[in-house]
Image (tube, rainbow, N blue to C red):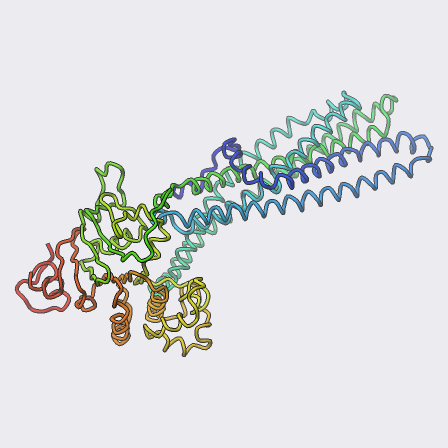
Length: 603
C-alpha cells in the first residue's frame, strides 16, 4: 500500500465491493425494510400533495363550491403530518443502522489489526491505518445513511412524477422535460469536476494524518533540533493545499445547485408559458397548471440529490476498497487449525534448529537478505543465557522469532519438542515476559500498566512486583501512589521510571521465561545495581534470556552467545570466551578500552 492508494478513487460503482458491503447491512434487514417503507411512504406523500391542490382548485375554488374543501384540507394536513413522521422514522432508523454498521466495521478492522504480524506494521505508517478506522469508515456511514436505501425514494419520486405528469397532459409533460438535456450537461460537469476535487482532498487528508501522527509523536525531537519553523511551513503547505482543494469543491457545489434551480425555474416558465395559453383556450384547467408547476419543482430536487449521492457512492467505493484491502491482508502468523496443547508443567526447553530469517523472504528465497543464517542453539529450563553482538547482528530478531512476531524463513524453533508454529500464539507468548529498551506504557494508572488487565494479578502481586525491582520507592512518592494517572506513552515519567515499571509488569505475570532486551541500558548505574540484585533472585529457577550491549550485565550468565553478521560465532561462559580471544574478546576490549595489540575491528 502506497501513498498513491489514498488518491485512487476507482470505479463509481463496483458490484463486487457493493455485495460485500451489503453483508454488513444484512443483519439489520428489518431496520432497512422499515426505513425503505418509510421512504416510499414519504415519497408517496410528496406525490399526493400537488394532486390534492389541483383537485381543490378545479372542483372547489374555481367553481365556487366550497363544500368538501375542508375535507381536502384535512387530508392535506394529514399527509403533511404523515410525511413528517415517515421522514423522521426513515432518518432515525438509517442513522441508527449506520452507527451499528460503523461499530461492526471498526471492530472487524481492529480485530484484524491485532492479528496482523509486525512486518505489516513495518510497511504501513500508523497515520494511514488511523485513516482506515476513522474517515474511511465514516465515508461508508454516509453511504448507508443517505445513499444505498434513500436512493430508492429518489427513483420512486422521479418515476412517479413523470407518470403523473404524462397522465395529466403528455404534451405539457414533454415541454417540462425539454430542459432535461441541460440538467444532464450540468450534472455531468459537476460529477466530473467534483470527482477530481474529491480525489485531491482525500489524498491531502491522508498526508495531513500521516504528518500529524509522525510529528506529534516525535515532538521532543522536533523541539530539540529546533525544527518547529520548518515543520510549521511544511504543515502550512499541506494544509493550504487541502484548503484550496476544498475551495474548488465548494465552487462546484455553489455552481451546481443554483444551476439546477435555474433550470427548474426555466421548466416552470415553459410550463406557465405553454400551459397558460392552453388554460386561456380552455384546453387545460388552472388546477392542472398549478399541479404541473409544483410537480416540476419536485422533479428536479431528487436529480440534485442523486448527483450528491453519486459522490457519496464514489467516496464509499474508494473507502471500501481500502478497508477491504486491509481486511484481506493475509495473517502470516496465525493460530494453527489444530494447535498442539503443551502440558501445563512442561519445562520450557527452547531449541533453535538451523534457523534462517529474512524480512524480504519469499518461497524460493533466492534474493533474500538474510538477517539470521543457520542459527542453532538451545536454552535449557532454568538456564541463564546472554546474547551479545554488534548492532545489526540479529540479536533482537532472535527474540521476535521466538515470540513468533515473525515466522522463520527456514529451519524451526521448538519449545519442549513442539514447533512453535504448531502452538497457539497466545499460549506460546504466555510463557514469556519481555522487557524492552523502549518501554511502551498505556494511558491509565500505574497499577493498570503493571497488571495490564489481568484480573488474576491482585493488588498484593502488583505491589510485590514493584517492590522486587525497587519501583515502589518512586511510586509511593507520587500523589496517588499506584492510582496515579499515566499520560500517553508515559510522558510524565522519566525513562528510568518507565523501565522500572516494565520490570514490575514482566515480573507480575510470573513468566516461565524472562527476556531482557537491553533492559537496563536506560537506567542509571545506581538503579541498575538495584535491578541486578532483584534479578539474581528472580532468575533462580526461571529461564532467562538477556540481550545486552553492556557486557557487564551478562558476565555472570550460565552461557553467552556471540552473534556477528547474523551468525552464531561463539558460545560459552564469560571466562571461556575471553580465553578464546575471538569476537567476544574484541567486543570486551573495545567496550572497556583496554590497551591490547589484539584490539581491532570485528571481522
